[in-house]
Length: 144
Image (cartoon, rainbow, N blue to C red; front, top):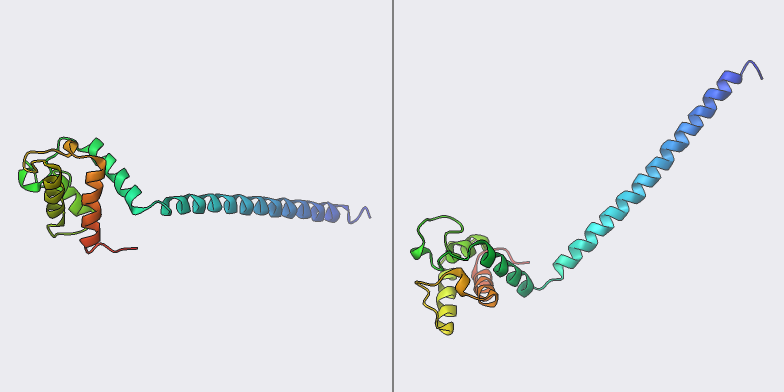
């Protein structure tokens, strides 16, 4: 027994080390699974929002980010993404057509707003959402 004492100690240490590594792997696997399940649950919550909810949230962001921007691109001083509501909504919905302009003119006409002089802040989130939804439905943007 004395002769093999060092071999027995080394074997015991190897078994302890292997056991510790296996326990660590099991712990990390459980932790990863719970993290993935939490992320899947979050994604399911986001995907259950209706397109109207998403459009209203988007509209509120636009009202906060670009309240002074003109509605129509022809009244913008610059020619880039957020220079007008028309340009921004066309960009978001990946279209080069005049769908945003059509929708803006229609919403403004129905509300008695002069689209040529109005700013984004002159619209309600619901009106912006209507414009966004119209453009989304008519654009080439891939639908779910």
